[in-house]
Image (cartoon, helix red, strand yellow):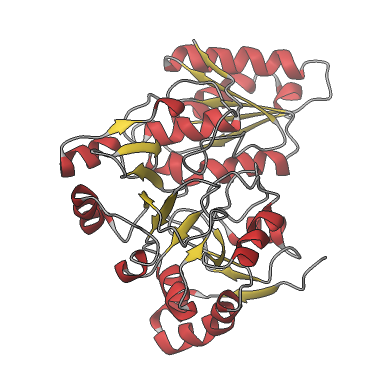
Length: 370
């Protein structure tokens, strides 16, 4: 049944007025406390929230997104006190990490308390929890008085929304309320870290890197399931984003990794081969430095260049912008009706692990190393 979705718009000026901000969030918070669904911004991507302690509320998340029920949800909290309601045990090293990195873009996977429904954990005996640093998210959770389960606020499988307009595009009529709070800051979902064992294990890379975690607690491993290019849909997903094709636009996405010269040559030759004499459109997602060269090359083929869309992801010297705009660019290729998208991949170090993790999912493992 189509819902009459309430849109609550938060302007920049509201952030300087705590009373006005609380008043604007009162109704969305009431939806959450009464087991409704509310999409809201976090520092990573927009989330689709519902009461994590109520099975009916959780079911509405899966229904709105069209999300497989064996895909775990992340529970968002506004204080460490809320964690006591959810986690059965917190390892000493996990407390060190929480003290250093919360609130922020990192999720910890704990053994869950037995009374917590398996619906929120995808049938597992663990629970994924994070404390976002976004002011609206924290205040909304606090006002609701509930821990809030919140996967990304998009139709399952599509690129995660980093702007409220994408949330409206996907979920208007499917949820009770959408809180519009501007573009997100990080652009990639949180790092997910299993802290149930003797040392932390990364289940999904994000802005908080393996290197940062090692600096804090001395050791950190990467789960074997996210190493390599293939997508494995068998078995149980220990974390959101580990199973199923994710983050994908309608276009066919292919990722290329190699030297700048080789990648530019491949983009140039492949794009021309696709569009010459065909009614097809090609998208290229790459660094600004590559785009400058490609634009000059395609200028020699004006007819074909009209069917080639180049979108940039910042400079090759700094990957922060890449992470921030990655999902936005993938959605823009759909808006521009591209049939195939070629993407510049990066080395899997630091933030590059998170970028490549999302690109492998978006391309269904179609990664070419030149």
